[in-house]
Length: 120
Image 1: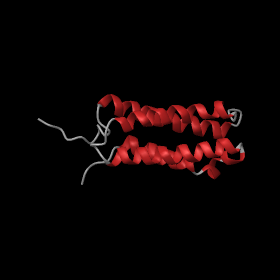
Image 2: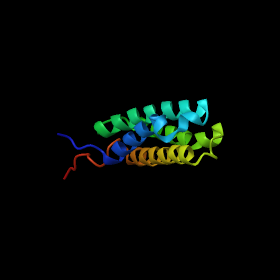
Image 3: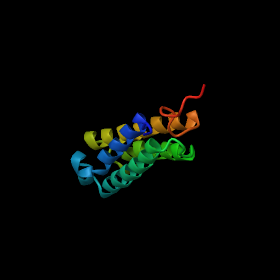
């Protein structure tokens, strides 16, 4: 059984948490904030889950995750809910996690550098 990438798994769980907007009460701030959180959370969870489970995933998925992370972190300021502490902090935290995981995956040249086989 192959190892899974822990970083991407954490990002996947964070994306699912962001997608469940009711937990963090994002959906009551604005409609745009709720939909942005839901859609970005679902997409981040799917991309991170794919990257966590497939060590041979193309590196483009990691850079796509970077773009999603940037948009998710910026969305409170774009949609005007930065004054609401919990929704803003949640979106920024998930965005930054997705961004960091994507950059690390993109720079390593593989989607899953933690579980890549070691050659000697």
